[in-house]
Image (tube, rainbow, N blue to C red; front, top):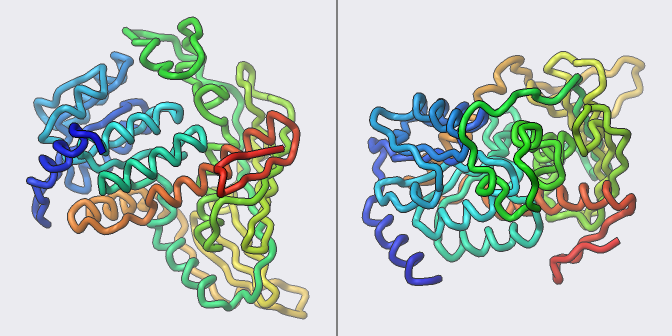
Length: 391
């Protein structure tokens, strides 16, 4: 830990939050997701005295949501210099997560970072090391870990009622017709936005649709698998997978680099296989069925989605009926707020959050392996000792 980190940490600990204190939050990345999170944080009780974004229209929109008199920044490091800020939200494109989180914890800030945790395996380990060294609270935005539905379903699987689970199946179905056609309407610090990715001419398509380009993210397969893989690994008490194989279809979204239809198979040391299928050229299912995880035990099967869970026992009758279930249609929206509330509790108590960086890294490793397999057309293995992948 360098001198700057040590001094920042010491200064931060001088302000110990009580149950009635409203912590000061800095928003880094004021796009659509960032502004949504800012609204949720304000509802929970955070003040937002600072906002940062390299695109002026986003910055201005973020400041409108922030607290009265909030400061705007183009450089996130200037936001981190503010000693009055207790925590930050990192809601930027994936390729910026690692450096911003590392800089934030070194500046003595707690962090809520959107999923996935990181863009490469190496930077993920660097993030874990930085969090351990600074003893900061970092919550990854995989909000299922704070959802009452998922927490309850987790107790069901932990009870052992399923027996041995050797197979987990899952999917996410939706329908998308096109990318965002928006044009740049204000100042954009393109070089800062690119960060450590390859230099490219300023491009509105890449800026507004970064999700669909390999330089910055992993497309829909990563955006949705981040939630699915994390939930599966959480329920199955798993580390990173031993191997991953991903097969993708054609790119159907004009302008995108990454397929919108794909299937992933993950092999785990815990003696089970999981598969995940993404179909964003499928029929738009009812929200209770557009994504599902099925844990197939030798005594029972557990189905879990955002709206509920269903336990199916072994049966000889032709009609499949759950023996136990809990359904809350439309209530998953509260999961993000519950996740933020858990983050606030951990800021005050210094306990580990529901989605700590170690779990975020295990999921991120699976995601990085998925993209490597997709691009190379090969099964990709992971060696935990060397922290390296191979084909």
